[in-house]
Length: 324
Picture 1 (cartoon, rainbow, N blue to C red):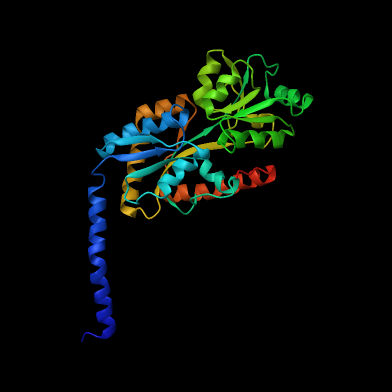
Picture 2 (cartoon, helix red, strand yellow):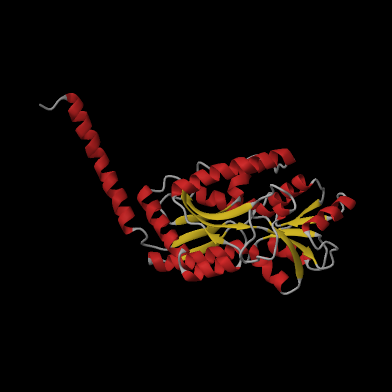
């Protein structure tokens, strides 16, 4: 006997069936056109370089072009917001940076939620920052830089690629823990900041391992790394924590899709990223510049983002940083 309750259940199932079939079809055929990987930073820097390397591998794996689109500006918020509000169909992805951990606390208003408007796909890489000084600096070690800064409170210039950027926050934490004061000089990107470091127009800069080529060629001096242990890419460079106990900063890059992207598509994306990160060309390039491939499940990336957000929110609050 077909009861009223049974009739309602059957009707509901019938109504859901077409959408479930359509969703399955989308997942089965994805991708059937080019995918856009949004990099929320200007072209030419380390983040852009890594994104293009990964995109090249993903194009081979997925059989469709993965086009890198740079949408820099506003501390990565322009690119982040673009993806957050894109259709959740798997054709717009974000090459996210650690700014997703800090922007919620740093900016008074955001046009997106870093934790609610994205579907995590996979971590891509983790990496330390390196402390660089010009060759003209009297500091040959991290301790000597600290002593130099203490003898000139507020007079030394600490450059960054932008207020609230990963390097800037690493520098803020360093100054807090080393009990020193330096004047912050925010630049529009890593390249112009580093250009001013070489001749000594600024006194210190925290940058990624991509910049080790400049210390290897003798153009600048590297004093330390922000990682928990010495990097295999620069084993003779001590960690900052060897001088400032407890200091540790590990930055990261990851891939996100818009929230509500079908789970089946997210899983296919995740499998592709994991395969790409195992490619020898990617592993070799990453390791040479102190990046560590760090594939993860979507759930692991989601939990990692929450924990990193809590850490940097506390640092930002204690430093009184705020951007309107």
